[in-house]
Image 1 (cartoon, rainbow, N blue to C red):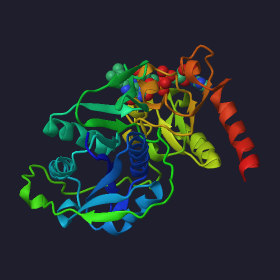
Image 2 (cartoon, protein in one colour):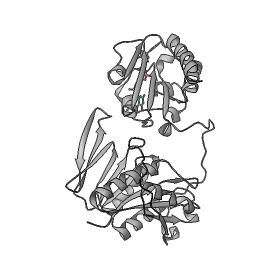
Image 3 (cartoon, helix red, strand yellow):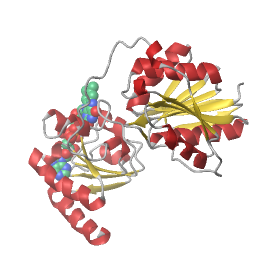
Image 4 (cartoon, helix red, strand yellow):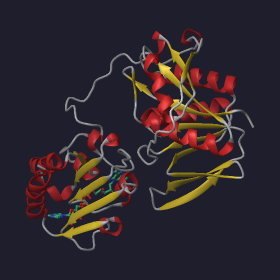
Length: 326
Ligand SMILES: Cc1cc2nc3c(=O)[nH]c(=O)nc-3n(C[C@H](O)[C@H](O)[C@H](O)COP(=O)(O)OP(=O)(O)OC[C@H]3O[C@@H](n4cnc5c(N)ncnc54)[C@H](O)[C@@H]3O)c2cc1C
């Protein structure tokens, strides 16, 4: 066994993404239990001064690969930087987020290291010094427990499932890596990033999501969902039926071929609860469903269910939330 439990720090636009505190927390807990040193690796450009914040999470050292060549995400260059770090530090554990970047990067890293990867996990514990992880399979219909014999125990965490927690503060040393991305053969380069114009919080980071389905009947009826979302401080999501009909953009789609979300509160309105939809939201902490069909499958996973016409219920809920919250 090596000395380290390592984790990946995600940087976007020069800022640390919240999922990095989730990976830091899990790596620190594993390190404590196994007597290892937690260590982070961050790859990007123009960010390294902020990294000492990880001291609050009990992390004594972070390696910063800070180079202008990493200003745009490049799977090849980022993979090479992380593999270089892992070869130098030889960690027993490596923890990443199953975020969009993590999903792209982690299989590449695993392949380059010829190690196993347990992806998108929702629970973790150590048994005889080895990770035992739980992950949803068959579009969320079942859960399996997996362990691995790989020398590097490599997992990705479903975002927002493992809550970040601070620890007794320590001073965090930021070590500059000398890794140079110009040595990497990069075959694909990002030429332009077109950001969504709505400016709303990304669904994967939202704490409250109000999602609408085909029961809304028309794109204009999403107005009532927008009002409910505003009343509860949430963002609007959608089922695939709605996205396929062109009522909402694909960025709003929750499910197997959309986004996987884990908010504190998920309100499903006029959504039947097809297995492909459940695959993207069943790990939400509290699920509320509104549907006129009492046998709709969504009620089988809902914590609270309201059977009735959404066109009556949603405005009434909005009115009540506005009274309580404002
Ligand atoms: C490979 C594959 C991938 C897929 N990926 C996804 C995915 O990522 N995400 C996803 O969502 N789906 C996905 N689907 C589609 C999925 O199978 C369903 O077709 C889809 O989720 C149905 O959307 P819905 O619940 O909005 O519509 P419906 O199933 O038509 O349900 C509409 C619901 O609204 C209710 N309703 C109607 N009127 C009212 C009213 N006035 N008041 C209250 N309730 C009302 C109805 O009772 C019904 O339950 C995928 C399918 C396949 C094959």
